[in-house]
Image 1 (spheres, rainbow, N blue to C red):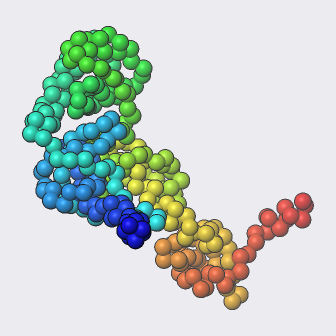
Image 2: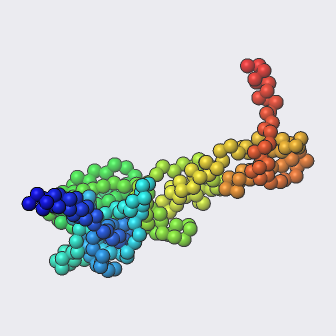
Image 3: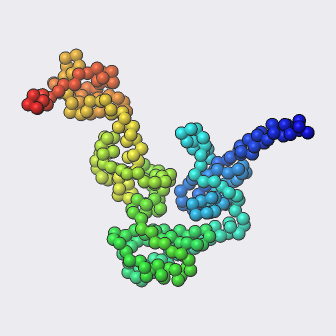
Length: 303
């Protein structure tokens, strides 16, 4: 008996380890037909494109559509991660309800537009979202000023017999919801893969030597391009230690004035005293001597 107890104790940890290690599969899902795609993990290995599954979301279990299988992103420790977790396949009734959601949202959109005109409100309706369980409807709109929509909400509650939320969004969020193509010819970053908006400044365009023409560095929303943030840190890092434009340097007794930095090539475009333009590689400008201006020398003497 004692030997059997010892064997049971020895084998128990192994069974626990087997239970803890569950093999996960990863899929690309979409909650709406023209919505953003996300990566989700699941223990099911036979999900096909177009199947409706139930996903654990922020507001409970919500349906989503399988787009394709996908390799998951990895975190800093190298572990695979996903934005959502698939719970199970959707039942037949849930699939029918999921298919009717776009129709109900379109009907609610048209109804709300008519009520906005009736109440003469200065607002532009962007999108309507209905929760899968029918407990709430969210109406997204844009407006230049604050809008008193209390009477509109009362009419919407009487019409749909559910909770109603009016949510004002900015032009960047409006563009994200509507979608479109950027100047690069690809899908807009905000509607394609971005989950949140980072602050963008004109300094980022200057750091990357981009033309400061508003039509070239602005997106569909008439705001600065979100992609200006992608390479900003790289340019900022590569420019460190490089002589700035306007600085005067000396190499082997020859003086040059820096005209432009090429941070990705790690080169400098310079002009000598005669007016000849040349390019210095990294080894040359690192060994160069920076010539201090006479004005700074005089200020230091006076100071």
